[in-house]
Length: 185
Length: 247
Image (cartoon, rainbow over the protein chains, first blue to last red):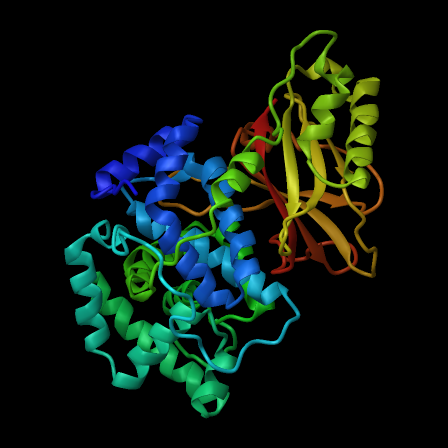
């Protein structure tokens, strides 16, 4: 696997995708598909659904690459946002009831460069996020993290944590307000 | 915000709702409403972008999983499907059925509706107004099926045709023009009048709004109380949105 080690290289590949360059899409795919598949799989907990969504994600990237603005977003967060949105939409649209427990590492990792994209999110941005999450109450940062990773609704989170729905909403909302203020600093 | 139990300022509410949307805690209905709001509320869209960028790094905790071998081929096949490409002008684009067939890719019913659009428009409604702008107004429900196809001539004549079966009920459907807003401002939707869910409608855009009919402005359809919006603004129930594009 070729590793695109820097944010600017991935951004450059996306710019070429916007011009209709298939080889560039392939580069983006090679460097990010394992990460995005992991993201979809974690949310959907169903391999076949996650595959459908992953295909849809790269088709979306192909069609919408021109709307990626490197001045406003980093390539990997832009891609992760597309993958999460597609996966969550699929999850909400499906009548299938949601699993009760999250899966952790349900699939064997078969990737020689597991952290290729980790290099792409700016280290300082990651550090800031970590600091800001650290300023929240433990339970707030924990539910915010698991909401993000598992794509669970308020209702599902409340059920899982065995707290009233209103309590869950207020934990997360207060957490978001605090987190927003910290991230802005 | 999914429920009004929070007494913050509108700005706080907007920020929290954007955070809730990005986090993914909203249920299907609330989520749809948030997606619609991204389309017409630039401040909200900016806030969503902020959250996506700032908390996207949480995905670092997800272990990568290699997709199956055939995945790239599937993607390559999917991007090779025809998309709307400008057709040769031979004989005029209005006579070009394949163009209309691919303009709103979808079911046979959609193709039929596009041909209906061709017939309506081709009969001369817009013939004298030069190159029109088109919009594929997609439903905001998951899947984003085409809801309407619209064409607007430079003179302000607009034809809008339903592109899929929409259920008629007691509510009225109202068409809105959402102009391109200068950076840092929010566009104000302007009503273009009521439309029908089941038949083509011809509308004359008021002269003062014609200059706002530009590429990348949007057309949106909302469900309103019978007779249309009384507030001058669309209700929260926006059922379809699409960008105006050049032919």
